[in-house]
Structures are given as structure tokens and as C-alpha cells.
Image 1 (cartoon, rainbow, N blue to C red):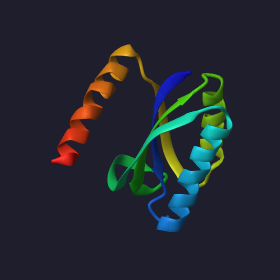
Image 2 (image 1 turned 90 degrees about the vertical axis):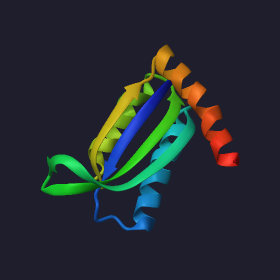
Image 3 (image 1 turned 180 degrees about the horizontal axis):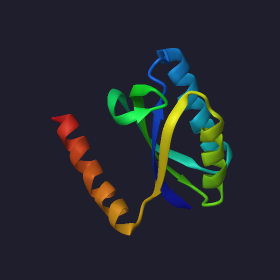
Length: 114
């Protein structure tokens, strides 16, 4: 299984309940297809770098997960069919990125415990 980083930009007009449902449907899809969610980080409403579909803002969510490589095409197709998803990007993490991610995690926990 490979590790992936996934940024999803949702429609800024979504309420909190709809956003929760959209995120849970994505996480369910990942787990049902043999994947494992490592981290979900909500960045919140942010200004887009450029206008997308007449929108100047979007709700950013970062997903870090492990999944089989065959599943990524299915996930991309799922995103394309969702009206709530404005834009998405899935990146396969290499050895250097994984090492950097693993070295970052203990520091964040240490800072949080202080």
C-alpha cells in the first residue's frame, strides 16, 4: 500500500453538517476499498489563488491516507462526480516525504504536551 496526501477544496457555501457528511463519505470510501486514514486536517475557508467556477474562496481539507494504487483512479472519479468538490489533488508520497512526515509528528506531539 502506498501513502497519499490529498487536498480537497469544497464549495464555500457548504454548512458544517454537509461538510462533515462529505468528509465522512470520502473516508468511508477509502476504508471500504482497503485504505487507512492517517490524518484529516481541516484548514477552513481560504481565498483561492485564482477564481474557480466563479468562486473566489473554498473550504480546504487535507487527507493523509494509505491505499492500494488501483483505488486512486476510483477516488478521482468519485471527486469528479461530486458537486460539493471544487478542486482536488492527490499526491503519492515518496520515501523522503514519508521520512519528513514521520520526523515531524513527534515534535508536534511534544509541543502539544507542553
